[in-house]
Length: 577
Image (cartoon, rainbow, N blue to C red; front, side, top):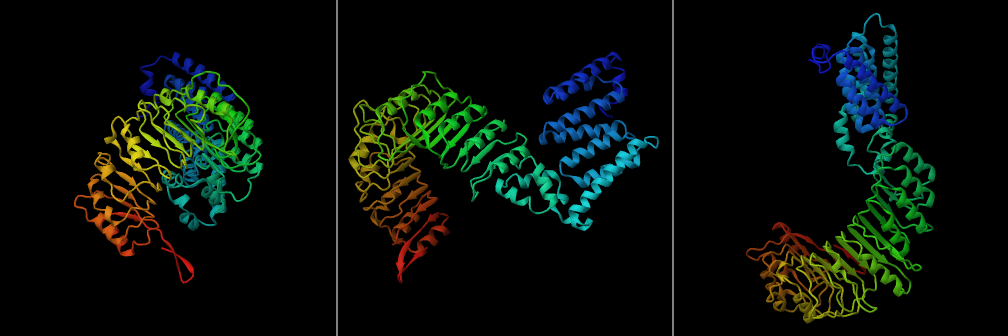
């Protein structure tokens, strides 16, 4: 029995409920005319259970289905349910069939819409001549569209958009990138019509693969088709007008990526951030002033992750002292021709960090922390878990909080690290100090010995450190630093060879080992593979000329993935394996 049948309602509700239902329906229609569709949906949904008469139920269901059509593709399925309830309540009325057919067309299911019109024509009352004309007209219109799209009924059966149900088509198309969805619009008129209205087509606007500058007209066309459905935008060679249009019209925009762009001023980016109120992720590869970075953090309401890859020093600016409790990730890469930044730039950022209590990831690349006169006190960042100071001049370690678990000090070219007795590094899961030409065994042990619990280390990268003596590793292993290691990198170490592979057997939990660009040979690889209780899953053997193909084949046969890239001269030409 239908939920909206008069028999089930008449014994429960008094006729006065129809009066209240009509009042709520009138309020819903007023909200609909004003464009407030969510309020209209709420008022009509409240009115429907109060309606007693079938005629009033049909009217409210029809109104609610119309409202849900306006709310977008996510509401088309509930709208179709309302239309089908109308068909059940009064089989001889044309309203339910007309509404259902319209919704099915919006969903791209023209063949089902055609069958709905045909079914309605069979059941329609003979006295309803107007309804019969409307149904017959829609039937012929949809039939003509199908024949125009496919040429014949046989061609219709071969089109996957017609053969497969919408749910299955949606499962397939949701994994396709934006560029592919745009190319597929050229398949046929039917595909173009479907993809232009398909609600996933414009959720991500990705212009990163464009070979030429995308015109403003094209972007505005896509924004018009998207109907505020865009959640992520990747803009290439954009300008101030386009950026403002995306930030203003895409109400659901949560992620914005701007690739290297010349001529885009920092003020335009700050204004865009103010307009995109739902923005949570911002990634900038264009030039951005340091003052603009501070303004972005201050004025963005919901920003959780900020990545700026090309910061240039700007005039003096001040932090206003407000705590920002939403930012979780901050990644800053500095850019300057002479790689020198005025002291006020560093001091301002040091001051700013103190007011980011929820920061979990901090990445500072090519910065100059610690030169004048002390490094910043990062211990105030009580939630910090990941700290990256890559290519950063450091005379001594900055103070860090006890929550820190991952520390990356890679690519610091020439300076040594001064560690005082009161410096304590927390128990780390991951530590990287690769590409450091000055650090040696004693200094590395001194750094790791300051950790409060060094046995927790699972990731250690000391690759491309020429002063690290890897002729033997007892100095590292006897200190207990390798007991829990799962990843270990000695990439590019000049002293590492086959003689050390036996010692690596002491790393019982090792899963990934990078020994690329070393003197290891196929014999050393065999020694690693034949360890009794080895858990090895991956071997990095890139640019190891003494490792032959048979060693790689052996590793694969034993379930160990191996990366092996080799370039060498042979017969006057390069050969890549």
